[in-house]
Length: 149
Image 1 (spheres, one colour):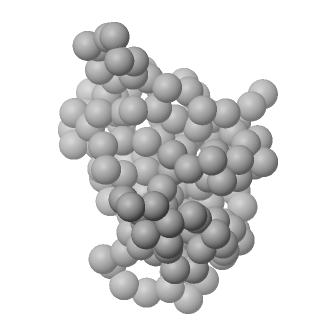
Image 2: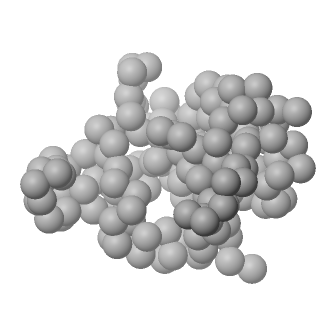
Image 3: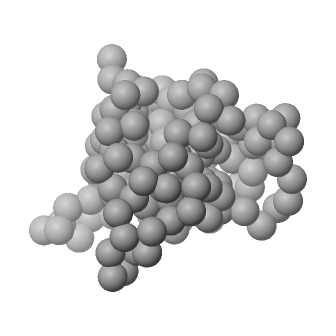
């Protein structure tokens, strides 16, 4: 059974941002789950993107968080840890078991969830995002950031 959905832009519209075709899901979900204002999260992620070292696959990024965030980068993981989050992987290379965005699968609390090609916030079993990204409970979850207790 799919998780319930609640519209939440994380304070994006109140920060003066407009438009619907944006790739700020990481900034939005971190803001929602952490309670840190959207502009503060956006600025931190933009700084991280701008400082990112260029490689053959990832050119040096501009100072923006609206064009996607490389969440595997050390600077991003350090930022999430500084907010008090810890990473929990739901998949392993040796297992064929998949985790889906469904009721009873994720723990309660404030989570930043990595799903296929997207990040979303889940608060006590409710998806908080600008759209219902659960695909009727068939969206694969790769892992999630949860507040360290």
